[in-house]
Length: 212
Image (cartoon, rainbow, N blue to C red; front, side):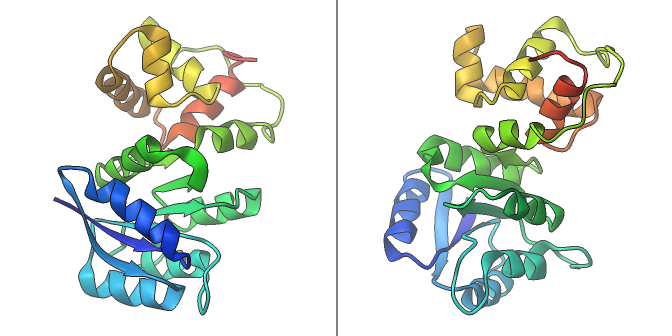
């Protein structure tokens, strides 16, 4: 069982996320927190596999709570996925630099939320595709060589679609392959590049002008 702690100051959001997580046969909600202080206390006490953490919460905001749970210097970090309404660049950069295993918008949908939890457990990071694309707009002009890093033609197809901001399900639909196959290709791509998450995979593609 993947044990999940939900931290959000809105009861309706906690209930909604709880229903999504609870509907998965291999996931369970072990606790709910309505503010950052409670989130940190419960995460340290319950040691969930993943914490779903909002940014704007009373007493202690989500980014500060994240720093305490997974930031630099934390001896035994907790896997945290930030799920928020606010996708400001400063929030994204701060969250990823302080150990977040994912950054999703609340309107990303149930499938992406579940995928983000699974990615966190497996050591990957999932960032909302729309955020991935926007972050790449700040890249300096491409200057890297057009090498393929040993990627297969199919892996390059997957990389190009990641760089365009598609989800795993959308990539599977475009390429007429299973979602599991997409995940297998992405795991191979991460090893070959190497890259820690979708943003780094997409940045590699954009820097080499594989997409426009």
